[in-house]
Amino acid sequence: MTVSLQVFYPTENNTTFDHAYYDTKHIAIVDEHMTPHTESVQIVKGLAGGSDMPAGFHTVATMIFKDQAALDSALAAAGPALEDIPNFFSGQPQMLIGKVQE
Picture 1: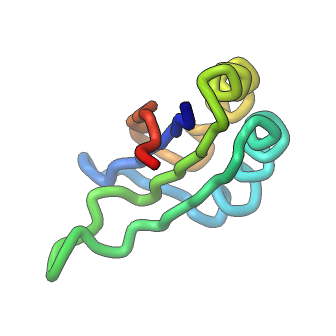
Picture 2 (picture 1 turned 45 degrees about the vertical axis):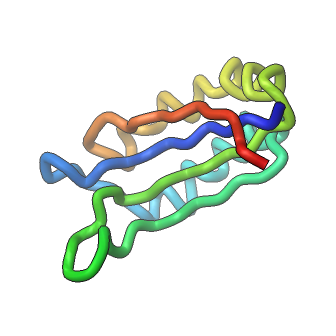
């Protein structure tokens, strides 16, 4: 069963997000520690939440894994990536682990 891990960085409560740091430093940490276990990774920068509405999220990162074991391996290696979050985001990220509907 293919599974996904999505990490949402909400804009609520006036959180700040340093996109330059995320793009140049954080992604390199994720690539080193977690990406070897993934099938694919997609990063989406929030632009809007609809017509004339601000985006509800600064960024959403989606990682796709072959199976639960691959996700578990990535999460076991995620320590450096998790520790890096305060360097670019002032809030608490939200996570969603789910079954990918094929």
